[in-house]
Image 1: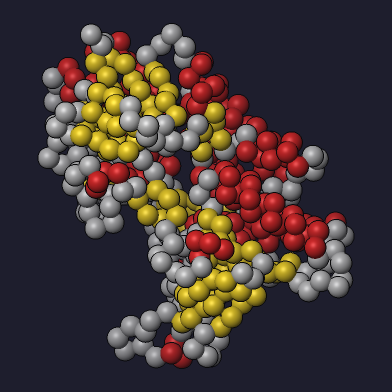
Image 2 (image 1 turned 45 degrees about the horizontal axis):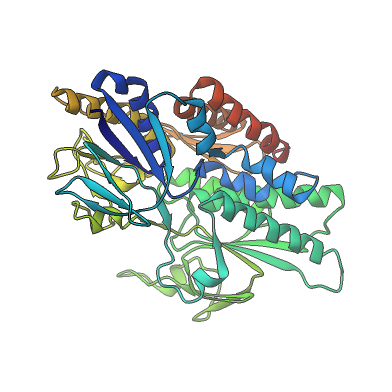
Length: 437
């Protein structure tokens, strides 16, 4: 009887593992079952392009075109592999029984496994901020990006009348997602102004960040360049500031807590009082993520952030047949001792090694250790401009932007196969580049 390998999560890590396993599953007489609660594989790093896409035509056609470059229908993908050893199930995993090696799906169905892969992604964290979940839109799924785009288009239609006061879009969070979205949105609005379809100052963009600089996980030069770029686009940036409350059409912002030895005068929040109220008709939240509670509910060893603790071979601590990788895994770098970031570039490289180790486990061979390579980090900053950090060096300009296009295409081709991956990437790239004029 064939053995069963269950992969939970169709992220870059999960889909990459499933595809690598499928191509070699016959060698261990195994069937691969990929499970995700959504019927799509999504490339989150390009969602800001969907949210700001200025495509003309019928609304439903425009949305379909924009979504086609970041979203892959997994049922259609499975049909391409019909007759082979990969099956996709669109279902939500409710529980994992480690003793009986069974998972329970919503509705009560159970699946047995011989090896299990945890590749569940992350979702937006709202940190208990009053009104944030109710009134803000996160930028974590294609549906989120399309909701944001609809609201932006609605605001553009509203401000066409001089009788309507200017509208403000507030972005919470100055990490890569928030900065990329703010820059591309402001660039798109400026393009509308140049075409004469939008009056200057009618739609404003503001960004709130809780630390003293943007992109705090990268070298300071990249953060400074991003700030200069946003200022050049006319974006209002409030640093050292926290979103305290979100109400309909209004956001309350307060200074961050002072550290030992700091004074209020040192903060860069840009207002003097105990709080500041910003009228905002659209709030986009990119201020943090939280990891799936499924692994901790199942009793797997997790760190304080909820990430699964794994060894250098991706085996979950204190298990013999459960692996974890991608966003949900706390994989510690062998030199720094820090967990690898939850980004696609890491997941894509982890997937083939994890798949090989699963097959080695089933064959009774020793497992391999994963050694993460040093990778460039690229942050698009609106138009044909980006910043790149590699081995301590920061490069700004068009070359990093072109490199980002190449890297994105490589992600898709590595995960979906060369031809299908290129087609998905090209469908999006030829549309998104039009925004970058």
